[in-house]
Image (cartoon, rainbow, N blue to C red; front, top):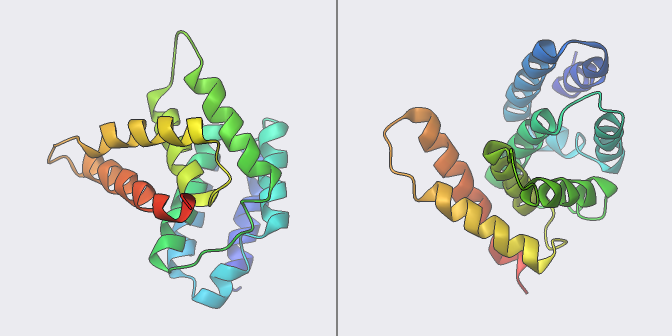
Length: 175
């Protein structure tokens, strides 16, 4: 089975498994993305894939947290592979991610800071210019706060690196 087929198999199994198994499948899909060559990588995240992800979100089959983990990793791999595909910027999923961000940001109580950061990173890494200026400014502020963390903890350093990578994509957003 090709890496692409393995990725799709895991993806389409997500709507019928428990939350813990979904997270495990996402981790496996993220590992597969790293192993893919450029040709396979280019065929995974298409408009149809983004529509499928949006469908899972809308039907509440997968949480925004889990989808953010998958899409952040996709954005990270895309940056590493210097792939600048425009598939997400015109999709309903990009609008949904911005809406999820705005909803979470506007909560008076019980804001999920981790989700806010994940959504900011997804918005910056994947929307490529289709982000409202107000949302862009708020995302930059959130990510700068993360980037300024100084800690030797490996997990926090990964968060800082991801925030910096997302911030580095702003040059493509501002014309």
